[in-house]
Image 1 (tube, rainbow, N blue to C red):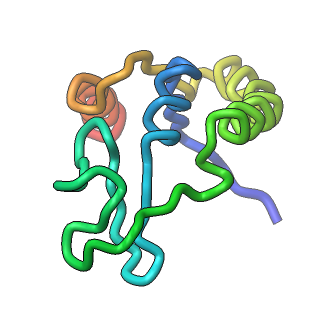
Image 2 (tube, helix red, strand yellow; image 1 turned 180 degrees about the vertical axis):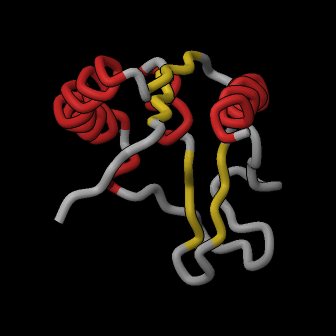
Length: 114
């Protein structure tokens, strides 16, 4: 079974930005509430806002694990991005802030789809 791909969006975010954001993520296992030390910190460091129970960091959110995951991701996706670039259907957007990148992505999609 094959699938025709009309458009490809490649988000090129610096590795260290991704590592920092993911490694600052902490969860409350019982409820699934997610905190981030940078933009959604708990009221009391290391404690769930509602229960006061300890927050935990998933093993795969630790910096060394995130870097390993990103290396594997890059190995798998770099050839695909190159392939779709050559076909003229891919666009790469670079940055670190979603509120900056999103308008660029939306503008490109609007131009391509309308």
